[in-house]
Length: 376
Image (tube, rainbow, N blue to C red; front, side):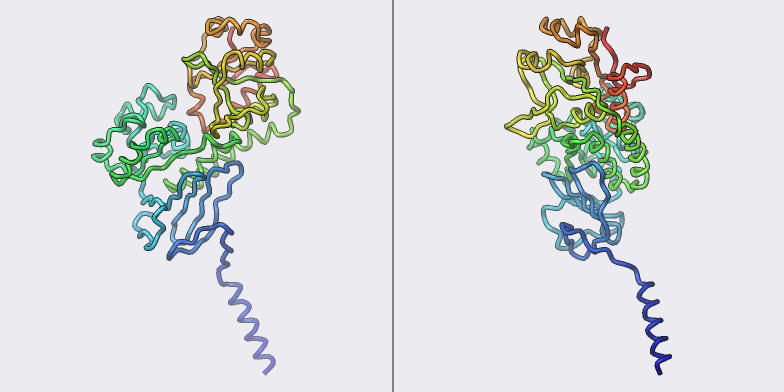
């Protein structure tokens, strides 16, 4: 009798071990009607979004201070009783209108440009070769900039998703019109990431839309490895100002929490503005007068002119032409004035290379740079 009981207990234990283990839902995981939570995406640097996976291939994207989006696999039904505030993204998503230029490089790295049918920037405004080629051969169509999209073209092409930058918030009527057409609007907030690799990690979010999570993980690991190589580098304590001159004569700089400031720190420098922010907003950029900039940055060891917004400078004389005050700057006197290329803002896929460039600038290794160049 005892022998049979022990055999029964052993069989029961083996059966229990063979059953699948169910993970406990994250404390803040959203309960969705009819769907069972499975896991949460692992993120290292990005803080602006989260992704929860549910049984059946469903994924809930939660963008901080924005909206939630449920990605529904092709052929699967939209859950009944879903909260009205959750936007539904029904796969396949292969007729995307992309107005957020910073996302193009990430789609390119995922080999998913075929998912983008419409763009908000003409071919002349792109610095990503594959995107330019796709527009020139007709695989992508220019459908008007974010504030003036071609609604008729969006309808005719069967647009299934509009990916916008935060600039769309300045044109709420446009967003409202797109949504009235039945096209969900996704707002890219990657520019609000504090860590530079936080922006790049948004590749994981976009991979969910196009079912390329494995490719995203592999690519992101290569960029994270570049940062790892610089992790133990002793800081040079050299100060860097990153800026451009607006058309109205004011100076545009990055807030101290911005990813550019973080890049400079990781590369081995000190951002000249250690406690700078816009008290009236959480914008990553701050405007100041030239006199204010002079007072704060005249003794900076390095100046980097941000030509991703303005036009690239050919030489130091072009900077002096903007204001003769620059003649007094330490970096100008010592020949440490640098300039970015136009590709900078669109290069969300290789920020590790930009950090390496800044590191080389600070250490005098000026060969083989990709994103910044020295002004004579």
